[in-house]
Image (cartoon, rainbow, N blue to C red; front, side):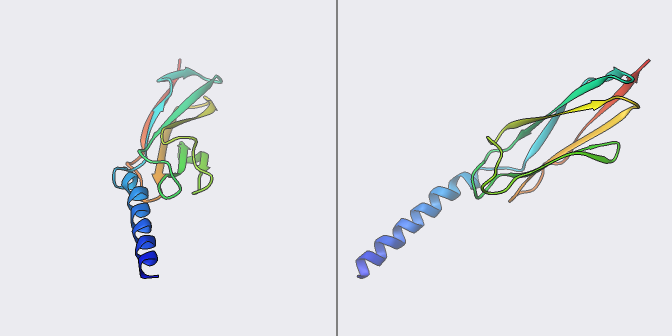
Length: 127
């Protein structure tokens, strides 16, 4: 019985080490924004939000991505341990209609390490 318990404990330790090895190499979630520098008033633009993170497993993943436009929330995606992004690096898109200059701020968050900080992009109205 003592041998069985020792083998079980050893297996648990190996499993924990295997699962945590990816966690120890992981980082904070980060975003980059891709949008035009300017657009004509009334036109629709596509904003691409590229999210990067070095892990995507039930223990360690990007748990949310937020896009703010002129201080108002324009998009929010929330993830959980069993409803994660498709990959550690992924892209989201939103379409915006230009009515005035836009200050776009996007941020992603790692459930363990937090965020690397927001990315910002200004879109000016073309004359």
